[in-house]
Amino acid sequence: MKIGDRYTRGKPLGVGGMGQIWEGTDDRLNRKVAIKIIRPGLPDRSAARRRFYREARILARLRHPGIPALYDFGAHDDELFIVMELVPAAVSLRDLIAERGDDLLPISWAVLIGAQFCAALAAAHNAGLIHRDLTPSNIVLTLDGAVKILDFGVATALDPAEFSAITHPGEAPGSAHYIA
Image (tube, rainbow, N blue to C red):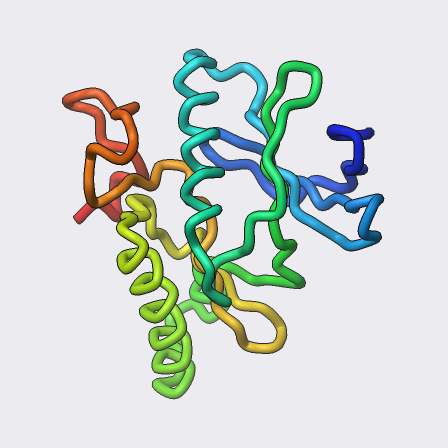
């Protein structure tokens, strides 16, 4: 299936609270990409569209190897899409912990993962952004040992004047077990 005038949607990679992620191909540049589209059937479509647009603007501000790069943002058949760097053969921190069961991560792994995670998070904070949904599912490790932070869908600016509020009083975006 074509997305926009230059992307071919491939296999599904995952589903989040607001979007679906697909592997895709940028037909113009002949490279693999990740394509995020708004998940069908969301009850408040207009809020989802506003969050999606904000996520694209947030990703556009971030330049760090620990955060997937934004390549494109647009609309196709009245549906918004975000095209970003495809994170190759990644395993989430959640899955890595689950695989190990009661066996703790070696300290050397924890230090390497933690250092890269903190550097990427610092880059987001230095850009004036707060992720608001840092869970083990949103932290992935590639086969070459790189750590990436995913899903800036509910991120916001440290300065509330930068982005209009989408979260209403009493709402808590993100994953309840990880709100601090």
